[in-house]
Structures are given as structure tokens and as C-alpha cells.
Length: 380
View 1 (cartoon, rainbow, N blue to C red):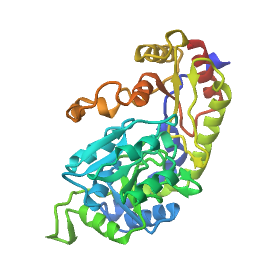
View 2 (view 1 turned 120 degrees about the vertical axis):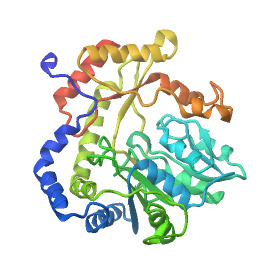
View 3 (view 1 turned 180 degrees about the vertical axis):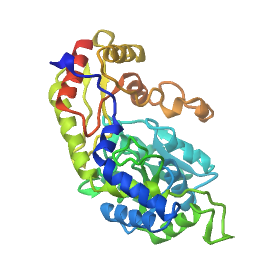
View 4 (view 1 turned 90 degrees about the vertical axis):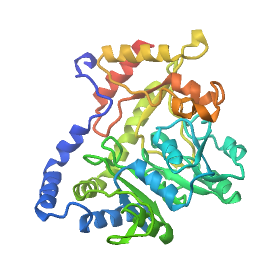
């Protein structure tokens, strides 16, 4: 029966659209007929609903998760001469924005959850440190209780990178509502994804919110009067309309992701050569990715070559997968000037050789999962 299942994609956003096609099409046509394509009541309405979902007072929509991070750093007055601590195991955008404002990224290794190792954060703090950017990677929340204690002890700002974690929570509090600001991406493959680029920032600080609104609109409160250098980073009304619809379904989709992760756990947890994702007590993840590690016991660990051979075999069996991420940030060509050497952050470096993200999307069927599980067991 398993062999009869069609190829299993790593993700499939077309299925989600198919279930919402009538709602989304009607909303998009209404926007087009309105002539209000930038800003306006639809964007403001979505901002209010997204803020309410996270139990915060402010939401500022923008055009990407990257801009959400960049604008947050600007709003917190972080720039040249400052240092910002973050994880080395994440997408380039997290560090890119630190460099873009003129500050220096300081990379820290990860723990078994793939998230930043909080034991190493405090040792990385210097007099130049102004902020920490924790990344709730793959939808798994960082221990925000411990992180906020570190930040408060050293008077540091906390910018939560929630790009992969919309709907996740730590101790029953939504990520994005715990730090000084939360930054979200609405890229189509995210848990709450639009039909194009989009992002948002959440905060309970009205002064930060006010500055963010100025910065996203060319540094202007009043049209044609510009107080500082800003950018053009606005969420389109069409995307706001689509996201408002999808927000209603987010919790159900996240519950489906949790059930899929539990099923993977059940059948992969004891398979030799596989390390399943680790979760922290107190965290409620939302599984943007289900990322395993593969190891070759005969070689005392895994190499990227071994991992890639497993992926190739999976592909031949009709199972697609992804690698997030093949090279940690501290070893990226653009950051060679920071002086990190191979072996300096060894846990992340080893993870980059071992990780495989298995198919994960809310509409994934149990039959498809069975194909993934049996194919993976065959490969190993």
C-alpha cells in the first residue's frame, strides 16, 4: 500500500489554498474593486487581530520578516559600535539585519533543541552588547524565562525572531509577546503564510510602536514631512485580506502539525541512526519543520556526504526533504572577517552535517507519513 502513495512533497501550499479558494478569491476581488491597495482599513484590521491573537497592545505590519527584524533594531537605536548576540544556526536574515544597521553579530552555539544555547549567552555579553535575538527555530520556543532573566540582569533588549513560530508559546504565553518586540514572517511556507511576502512586529511598548510606524513609511508621520531616514516597508492590502482569513484557521493547522510530529515521534524515536527533535518542558511548539538528525554509527557521527546520500535515497523513493541549514552563519563567507574558525561552535557545525527536514504541512496524510517513515527506515 505504501508504494502506491504518490510522491510526498516537503511542503504543499496548494492544498491549503484549495480549501480556502472561495474565501480568498472573494476577499482579493473585493480589495481590487476598492482601489485601496496600500494601507487602509484592511491592513489596520489585520494588525488589530494579530495583536489580539498574541495578547499584545501593538502590531505593526511590514513587507517581510527580514524588515521586521531590521526595523526593530532601528527602533531600539541599535547601530554602529553595538553588538547583538544571536544563534549561528538560522537563516541569514537574522544576522544580516544586525550588519545592515551597522552593528556586529555575535554568534552563539546551539543546544539539543536546535535553539540558542542559553548557557553560552551570558559569556558572550560585553560592554558593547545591546540586544539578544533568540530564534524560535523550526517552531520550537526558546526558554524565554531564562533568556529574559539574562537580558534583564544586563539591561539588554530582546528581539524575538518568530518567523517560523507563529502560534507557539512558552509557559502559555505566545512567542512574540515576551521580549521587547516580536518579529514575524508571512512567507508562504510559514505556519501563517500569505500569497507573497509580508511581515509584522508585535510589542507592548507604545513608544517603540510609534517609531516603527514612522520608520516603515519613509521616516514620516505627516505626509512629505520626514523626521529621519526610513524605508518603504508596508504590507499590501491584498496580503492583509488573505492573512486575516488564514488567521482564523491557524490554531487548527498548528494542531494538525502537532499531531503529525507526534506520529513521526512514535515511529522514529527508537530507530538507530535517527535523533528526533527535542522539546523543552514549558514550550508548546508549532512544527514549522520536523527536523531529524541522521548519524552513521560506524563512522562515529555523520558527514554532510552521508546525510546527502540519505536524502538522495529518499528522493528516489518518492520522498522530498530539505536541509535547514547546510552552513552555520559564523562560517559564511560574508562573516569571515569576524574571525570564527571551523570548530569554534561545534554543536551547530555538526548539526549542519546531520539535519534533514521531513515533509511537514497541515494537510499531510497518515498514509503519506507512513511512506516517509518506511522510506527513511529503508535508507538507513
